[in-house]
Amino acid sequence: MRKLMPATLLFLAVALAASTGCTRDTGGGEARYLTLFSNVWQRCHTLGLYQAKVEAVTTRPDGNKRVVVAYVFDNGMVPDQGRAAMLVAPNGRLASDCVLDLEAGICLCGAQKDWHDGP
Image (cartoon, rainbow, N blue to C red; front, side):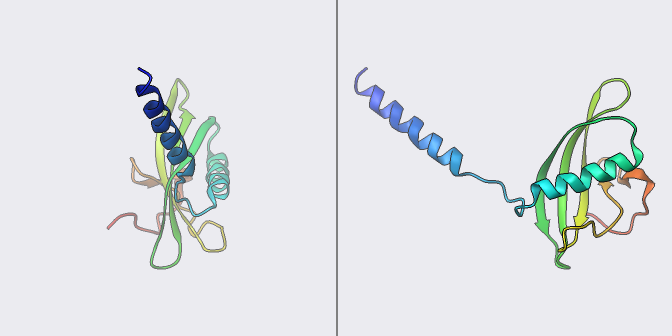
């Protein structure tokens, strides 16, 4: 039992150190991305947005970033969830008015689809 205790403590210390050093690659602009998404949501939804989280950020060949946001919202009866993708220009603004609902394949708020998501 005594020999097991130092090994357990060492494992916990290594696990804690590894977990605190982990960061997600969101390009350092997660708060900015969430603000952009929230502003788009508020333009056309009267139902509440409970939670939004940046899932991924990838840089496209044109310099814009594709930002995927997972969100939880009030659908009028119960909380529901969705995923959306948006293009963010290098200046930190939306490169397109189309914030794409990834499940439905349409733009939020009825915006015109002017970019293609995927291969």
